[in-house]
Image 1: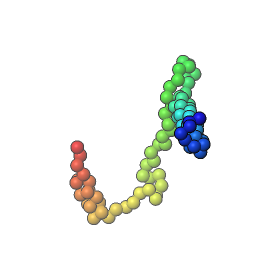
Image 2: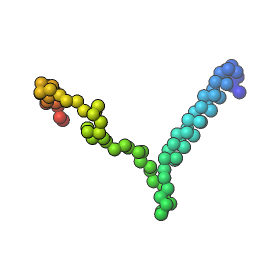
Image 3: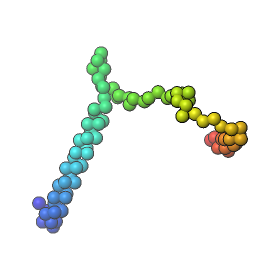
Image 4: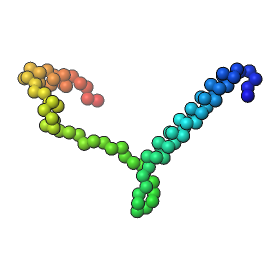
Length: 85
């Protein structure tokens, strides 16, 4: 194919080119596959990813920690030092 490069380099170039094509095809598939058709209009709309609902602190006992009065005061002092621009 190219007179100035070896056969191994040509094979490597071909593999790299095929990998780039597969990547572009996969990217296009993800982009166009994420659309959902509305049944009433038939138009494509972007599908929103599923976001789980935020759990409350009382959902599980391991998700909350009881702080001592000194820890609460230290945390409040730390929060006051954060600049709010």
